[in-house]
Structures are given as structure tokens and as C-alpha cells.
Length: 191
Image (cartoon, rainbow, N blue to C red; front, side, top):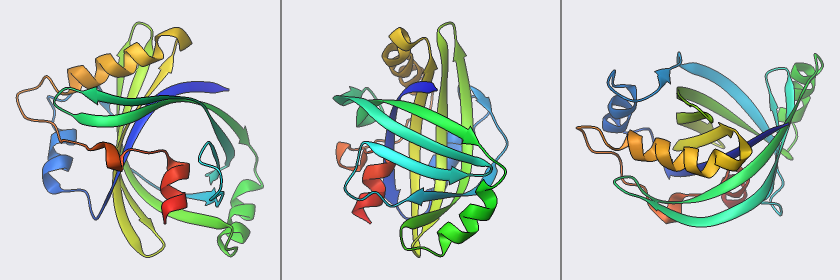
């Protein structure tokens, strides 16, 4: 089981070139991971914004929102909702075969992702920063997220510190609005 504190924003359209350049800049905090392309398949739980179930590569993943901390303002970045999530991941060789059957069902939603991540390590844990391009239901979206993992008692502080450091660079950060901040289950329920 993994516990995280995270914030996400979802916006319609493609990732703006300016945002992608900002995220990929060599002077940005954290270690940049190689670009990743994959398909995640989410169970449509429209009536549950606190629970996410997805098929990812050879894993069945269940994510449950334990706590909503409410809206937060991060100077130079904007406003968003931070939440504590618990995630269970079950590897199983049958998942890819099941995923092909799930795609054919109207109860599952396939999301094609192109994702960049930066991992910012600190003493009490790490914070993953994520910029993703999403294709689903013949729509294009993009998202930016920060997810802190590590010492449970320090996760909120770790998230806040990372986002503050992210926006203390010479170039301006994107400005995100509260109305675009929500979890994956909420995002999927709105489509």
C-alpha cells in the first residue's frame, strides 16, 4: 500500500508548448524521467469520486481518497485541491488479456497517455511532478499533477515545499485555477 498527498489540474486541449518547455527545462527541479506512452483503462465509477480502479500494464490498481484537505493556494502556481490517497497495486499476468476485454465494455474508459515526470527527492520522501497529454472518448486533455510519497506525517509539507521550489525559478510558472483541480475519478465522472 502506498499513501500519497496530491493535487491535479485537468485542462481541455493539447499541452501548450510554453508549458511543455517550462516543465522540460534543464534548470527545473527534480530528475526528469524519459517520456512514457501507455494506455490506462479506468472502471467507470461515475457515482464515486473517492475511488479509482484501473488496469495499468500488468497491474490492477485501486486508489481510495482518504482525506480532502480543501483548497490551497500555492504562490505563483495557483489554487487547487490537495487530497490524501491510498493505493493498492496487484500485479497479475492476466491483466493485459482482461484489459482487451474491458476496452470493449462501456463500463471501462481507455485513456492514452503521453507522460513526463520529474522526481524531486527530499529527506522525508519524494514528490513526483507529472505533465500528461490525455486522449479519451475522442477528446484531448492535458494535466499537471504533484504527488508526494514517503513519511506519512510529512506529505503535506513535502508537497507544499516542492511546489514552492518549483515556482522559485527565473521563468514564471503556469497559473492554475481551482475550477480545473480535481482527482481522476472526478475528471472521469464529468466526461
